[in-house]
Image 1 (cartoon, rainbow, N blue to C red):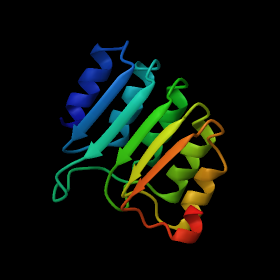
Image 2 (cartoon, rainbow, N blue to C red):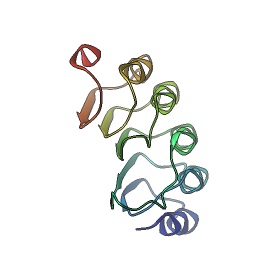
Image 3 (cartoon, rainbow, N blue to C red):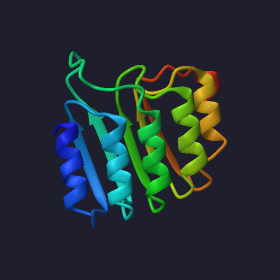
Image 4 (cartoon, rainbow, N blue to C red):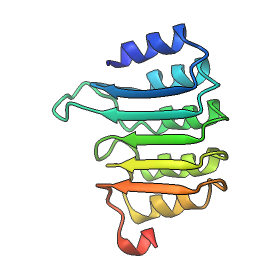
Length: 142
């Protein structure tokens, strides 16, 4: 799927509760459109494919923030991106606005241990956290 396909999906299928999108490119506008049109989302997973594709916009902090703010019923959230596509600020915003998140998968996100710490200060309902190929040290994870 492309970012245009995700925008089309969001504007035409407003009752969606679950999306697992494998995208070849993505931008903040696509995520913001999804947030403003699919407020009933409970489960969202995004995997960014095509590592060599340079058309993607990053970081995706503003789009991710819009998504966790605009979808207050979000309980499951997965991001498998590329290095640099979600900064420590984006991690912090997930913690701040992901009040009902119970399960999160992080793949290739964050910049430093501080991002994980900022995230961990939020998400009071979190029950399960999966981390794959991220920059975080063992000390930060514990």
